[in-house]
Length: 228
Image (cartoon, rainbow, N blue to C red; front, side, top):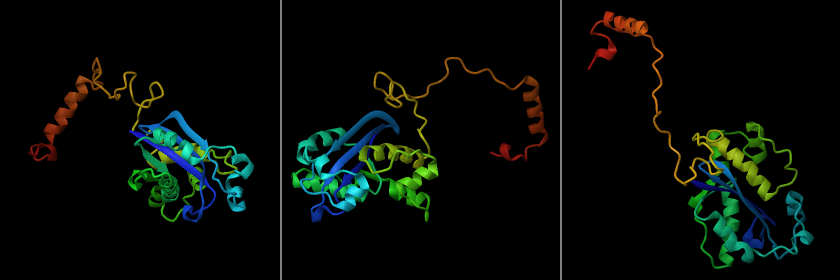
């Protein structure tokens, strides 16, 4: 199972009012294990950066001036995410911007049912508690000390750790990492536990077996586990 943990930074809150994406960061998980593959891109929004947005992520007009436009990176971005589920904190926000950018290029929208919203998961799991990314890092003891400003790739890497905790802890399906590809073997097939080549020797002694049998017999035919 392939998932992409994703985050964006933008010039504001509403693409319908002219706001644009200025950064995308993404981290690949396979069977809930980070593979080391990432996607990161700064984007020229073709507009000035509002002071309020600059205070959040620190991406200014001069820095973004020579970065590619969204139309120049759209195909590479879509190729990276493929058909994977998209793990996003407050998914409605990022999906709104991604689909606006794709729509302006006459490309197909990303269906909302592809998004796994970690904000919604956190609110269901911890009702009434703060559910921001920083609050979840504190709850799970995840180091986010380098997060002085929002950054899409850093936030994606942190969110990947938070997501694994939200769904039951790191490597919740007990996948064994082999060759950096989670629980897949070198030939690409899924790893599965098999029978032991030599069964373990019994640890119960003959005397213990006899004592247990005598104990059960002494309880008579009315014993619960003797009822058919």
